[in-house]
Image (cartoon, rainbow, N blue to C red; front, side, top):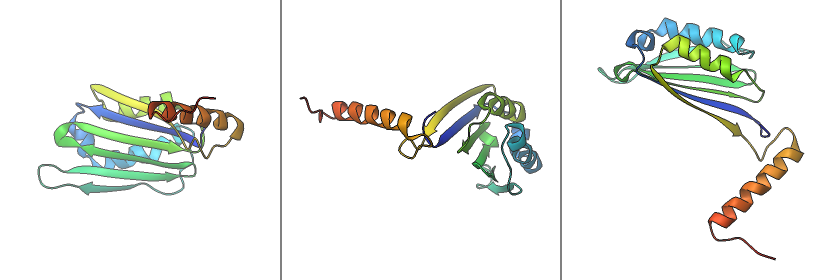
Length: 147
């Protein structure tokens, strides 16, 4: 990672509805996850119910000194998605393990993004990456200049 920070995007499919509809469970997950992945919680989590009858779910977030963690559940679909964004490195494998343990999905998808490549912490490495990205885009768009 050379940008501002890592952003983990997690989707869990075919989760048991109980864990997705329990407000207290989601609160506990958000309350304990920061510490388990070496982050610094700076406020208690907020968890709210959302949706219409038959399509209810929960949305929760917790602010961490490094940024935030958010989780959205959709019990009728057996689906959960979560975002962990930080300006510092964190234990991605531990975060994935904690999310899997908390919601017991049968299948997961996840991506780890390098956010803020033009606002890096270490300018040298990021400058080279941004230059490469710009060259690829110019070539893809037919705007490449030859010398």
